Image (cartoon, rainbow, N blue to C red):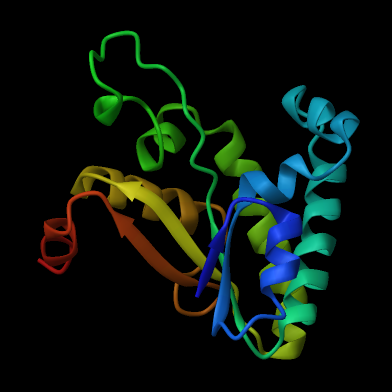
Length: 171
């Protein structure tokens, strides 16, 4: 699997010998016109959702039959109380701390799932930097609350900062 944080690199990697492409949502969103991003920050997110969904569908078609792994945006917000970047609000914790973009990204995935259900392709979502069981459960609630059902609408993968979370999630 080729991992990239750049849409143009992703398109180039799509023709490589890899089994799939791993791409971050912020690469997709940042490739869209700045006016759409600005509208989305003001609560007018329908245009960015449609544009991002169309872009992802076209990218998935271009690498078919390889898998496209979409990472929720990682982002980075300074945690004023943190003395070390490891404890900063990023990855899963950022989405729970600041859910506005998570809602937009989940709506993009919901639209993508709906459109891809006609082609029997299920989107693959990677949750970035899940450090605690609480983060995993919180994100899972948000995903289900957005109308996406893991296993049916999306394949769900975790990028665990602490691998023991996987065994704890089974309990």
